[in-house]
Length: 381
Image (tube, rainbow, N blue to C red; front, side, top):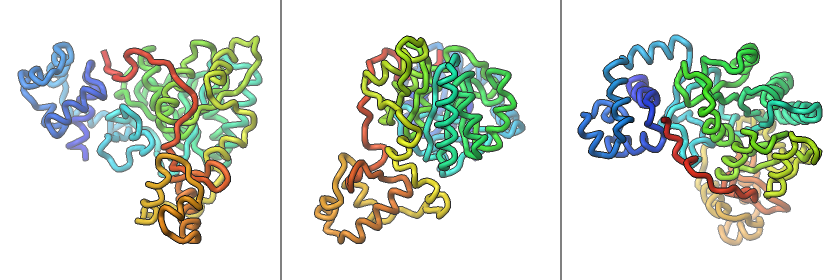
């Protein structure tokens, strides 16, 4: 795998070549290795911008990819590419998935049942209490808590998940070997031991401000839903909420005091269509995550069979009542019911309301986002 992945790492190091340009290179050359070794005139002919081409040529001449790969492996950093089977399946579904992920710690199949908790760095006592209670409740029910390791809400969410004996994932705006803020190094070590630290930035990348908005798409992309606890009107948590809505994830916001700066963003999200989070149990119920414990205990990751595939296709576009499913499939109600129960435990479908089912990931949040120029490409400049 090293022979293939090291070229993905090489392109990941080139400023000016982001996810979209890299995909274009892969489509043209068929592999990262052939694209890396392509002559400069050919790269120019297919439209690689001059500055990106110059950066690529400099890096090709300066760095030995074997040495780069050796430095990564020496730090026990795992590299995943979009072609790897264990690349997070939820993240692979988003519009522009990161081509390369760097990981310290471990990801497991159960991490598909993840919920992100994000919010302000300057939280109130109320925000601290809500974050702690919600993260602990999710973790106690075997739901992985995702956040960004920042001060405030993020750190409390990670710590509460760990204290509850659960798993948590931190997504960084720096290399996974550059912990920011520095006072969270001990917390980062605990996360590595009970989850993972993830970044799409190469090891050694400093925590520059421009890195954080794009990384928020990974926080939401890894998650079935996000919870914004407290956020000011310009909080980075609102960027995560925008990405979540665009990705079809459910967006929850904690209602707050209308006179508090920390509640301006969350109250605005609710006005725009985000779900108000009124108790810590409702996320589990809404997303059918109250069955994750049973799923993990029974190890119900079974191969998808023909019946499951047929039922999934029926409920892919809209919720259907079990009677409609039986009618359209011409399958007995006993077999349909049994299969839907298994599919629900495996995270393939959810029960929207009384006996109506829909494929997970196909429903769309009611929260509407505004258009933002330049957010879709994530090219590094």
